[in-house]
Length: 511
Length: 109
Image (cartoon, rainbow over all chains, first blue to last red; front, side):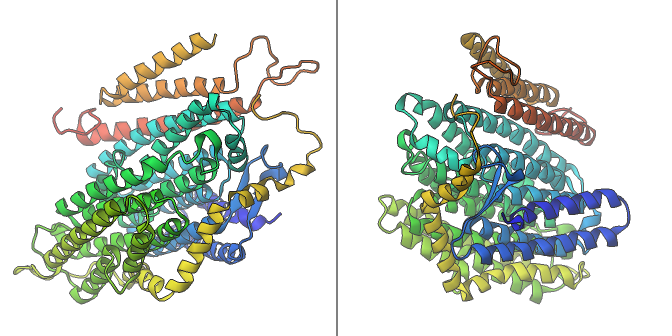
């Protein structure tokens, strides 16, 4: 058994505990611990990515309990890819934060590590209830990070998120209870086996459980009609927190891909292809609503928050196309949209700081202190997120449209995605000209931040260029990932392979 | 017993939804707690209901109870407790910021 798999959970947990113990040892100590832990996390994630790149599945049996009885952590290509993406985003956010944003409120670094613990755990786990637990860890850390810095708008947004997500957790538990009542197991691989053989008479409860799970994941991924909490919250959050939150909607999408792809796939008997009729319309609707939000925004951060919703919607509609090529396209799109989304949130904060009282409002005239630097970064980010050539956003969108070509809903996908792209370009060019050109006779304020935040922002925004240059490699990997996801038997076999070491199972599933 | 339990869960969830829709923070907290109780009973029932069974293990008993739902409920209780505590603290802070207890933080008292 390979203990490397446990490290992405262990590193944030231990460093978080260490941060709790060192208490108020000073910001240098806190920052060093946080930074060392996050960089170590990135290294581990890259090692895992290389290890599973060949197609191997790494399974970790906690406490060496055999598969359906204990909790397993599983690393496949998808998990490793998401872990790496989260770690890159975390390193950049932390580099940005240690320039001073971490002092706006207490215990930033502790909360940051706990947030990473929840995110990594959700990507690793192979157990439905364990997924719930990691979701809760991720959520409670995100509530506190949302509040980081204080202020009325943050308190209001946090209150909404907490109430909504508590209701969401209740629905998650009801779904788990319903599924457990039918199948008698919560291990995802075992569930896939049991669900496939469930009789028609119990399929109703099972399908209800599966669809309730969609409600929960859609709330996390901010899909219509459950996503209206996101724009005010992310627009109010402090920059490093908002940048890290760019991966949070992707956790919801990941959960849909993992749980529904594995358990309610095409060969799931009476509950087969449970989500196929739902995902495409929900995704299309989310894209439409988010595009309207982007157009209506009068503040840069709110505009970016709507763009996050837009990317989640695009992902869901791509997954709704229900083909291997579409899954691969969705993964490539995830990489690009997460990096650029996070980078733009950091950039928006840089811009807001240099505009004094005007903040990032688009209807106020105020010049920035470093128009060349920030303008260039904004241009790169806007091109990357809107999907214009020559950056990876364009390739990702092309890839999605290509995979939609033979689908019966192709006309809807093409018209919605292309039209929304055009409107996003209009909104972004309007925002850019308002921020950098329509400056009136305003005085130049001093540059608020040093070089480090700009570097962190550049790192994320130029991720889209790197994804374009390494496009062949990236798409080869996402294709292999999609193929691995489609091969459910391999996943089930890998997880359940150690069942033979049990002398006699005490209990049959589904008592 | 199944019918009684399902009616009970139904009534609790209905009351919880009513309280949640009041959009005042105290009823919302109560509603979420009630929702948590209802969900816990539901989870507990997912392991099937039995009368006169052993609490966990007893030799010679053919029908042993399912221990997993008990573990799930325990975890759910702990998590729900922590979340509710956080919500109450947050609500107090919101009360101080806005001077009222409306969930949407309207500026009118």
